[in-house]
Image (cartoon, rainbow, N blue to C red; front, side):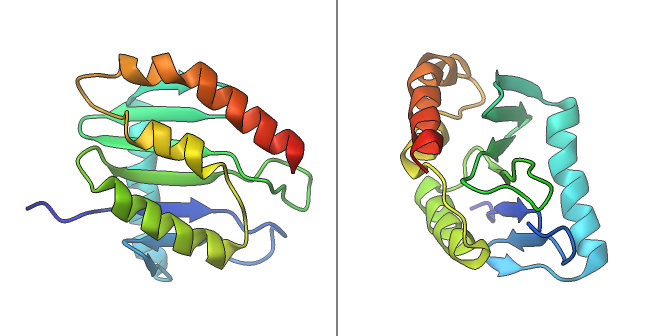
Length: 150
């Protein structure tokens, strides 16, 4: 069985402290490792196919990996949106991703629309990208309503 490589990244909101990066539910502090993981996530956004490209949400697929840029209820100290990046393999256990996400959200003290993200996670498939496009309208409406309410 393939080992999971689930990565979450969030910028520091005050733009002074270190950004937060977790791999497989463990905080990564080593700068070389952080750089390696950030290059891995960048590869998906630079070389991958953008299957959702919206002001609120972006999803990329490259080979068997995906990157989701998840909106949060937070802005940084300059007033910019502060999304979370999620990188994983298409075949990784979705419930494990959601479990790690819950822990990550507690650490960074932010909120997201988990129902919308769960919809996307369960529809990210290398050979069935169109499923994502069919659910995106409903997901975007849910995210917009969530952001308006918070």
